[in-house]
Image (cartoon, rainbow, N blue to C red):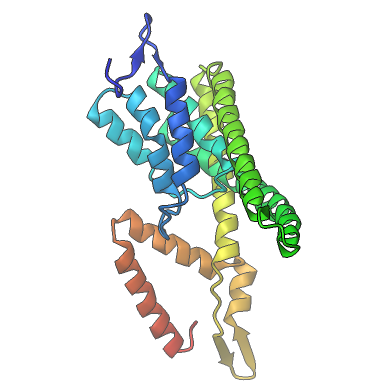
Amino acid sequence: MSEHTAEITNNNERKLRKSDLLRCFLIWETTSESCLSYERLMSLGFCHAMAPIINRLYKTKEERAAALKRHLVFFNTENNWGAFIPGIVSSMEEERANGAPISDEMINGVKIGLMGPLAGIGDTVTQGLLKTVLLAIFVDMTLKGNIVAPLIYAVVFGIYIAAMGYFTFFTGYRLGQNVLSKITDRSIMRKITNSLSILGLVVAGAMMVNNVAITTPLVIAFGQTSVVIQELLDSILPGMLSVIFVLGCFGMMKKNISVFKIMIILFAIAVVAAFFGIL
């Protein structure tokens, strides 16, 4: 049997091997943050990590291409605790390959819904707590003349990264197996998909508010009365200009306008708006 052919049991079930999962985990752990882009952040790394899973589960070129394409959407998380996500998605791909009613929207909904919370946990625990404590200990040891302290730090932190990533990845896979195999009702799947979509939209909205801040200094005077346009817009919808900006970019991307052209358009709008005192 070819390495890239799905393993078929007597009842035609396609099953992932432990080696497939290990390859997925190792690719994710070592390369997920080595191919970041401003457009999609970690999506290429996620897609790369899913390649062993997709090659095992899907037999035709068309199936594999479609599976890879659905993992090229925007994605970003902390890759240590976030290893839970490729783990559970591997389980979802396995169920889908065996006929479960799991749509692209549900898979992407799970990714979007989990990436924010896990990034918050991972950044807090790994970067904010553990790394800070370890550095405080081993930097002090180094300053006191212990020449092996940096090496010990690298080993201890590396063991934590590998162990925690392994644990979260396979926990995600086992959780997906236990939960998804029990879901057969399409109405339940639809409710799950809708819930995850709502969660994803909430996360996207929060990112929009926190990362895109567009205001206008424009003031319109009517005799003795003046109207501050920004205050008027905020009374209608706080952050309205930011929302319009993001939706405009999204609309241009939906029309297959390249990111470079979008940047040129936004630059031109910014120059003109600044010249006339609109933004």
